[in-house]
Length: 203
Image 1 (spheres, rainbow, N blue to C red):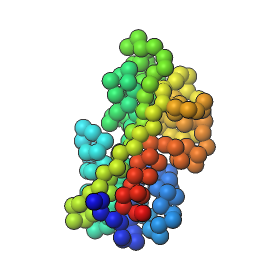
Image 2 (cartoon, rainbow, N blue to C red; image 1 turned 60 degrees about the vertical axis):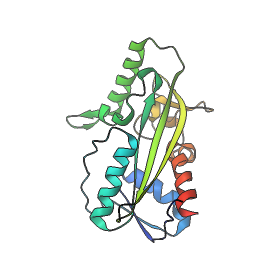
Image 3 (tube, rainbow, N blue to C red; image 1 turned 180 degrees about the vertical axis):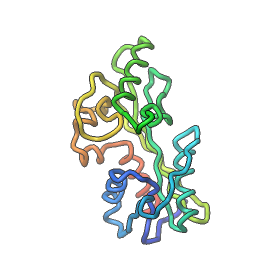
């Protein structure tokens, strides 16, 4: 049995304002006050896990322990089959530069790496998201979500964030970068994980 969420405040362990708004919107029917890690003055913990679930657990438990509130975190990334699942858990790391993250550079890097393998199109890929809801007593619940699709080139669209302009989800002619943000949020890997979280802990 998954543990039900009965509290009225939920800490979302992210410093990303867009992600915070997205999660608050998904939980708006459940009378939960959503607060972000930045509002609580929390530092970002070192994410040194080898999997999405390990990194999500690190963030959720650190936030729950520091504040005494239940905390929700996610770790997500892009897995490209031609690259044996890379960049995967290192999706954001591929964008790191000395002066912040450059996702155009990261997308170019991924494209060059795929070309180097000689793989033929479609270059199948998926976005993965693992949500972890942790309580201050150390208990947690884990919910994985995915969105299957392919990586394309050249980049298309300026919506979204990260690798969205090179990811075309199955069944759609648009990339995530060309989709309306709120439309994308209904079908994304995070939405898939969220449906499982809501069914398990909120309904």
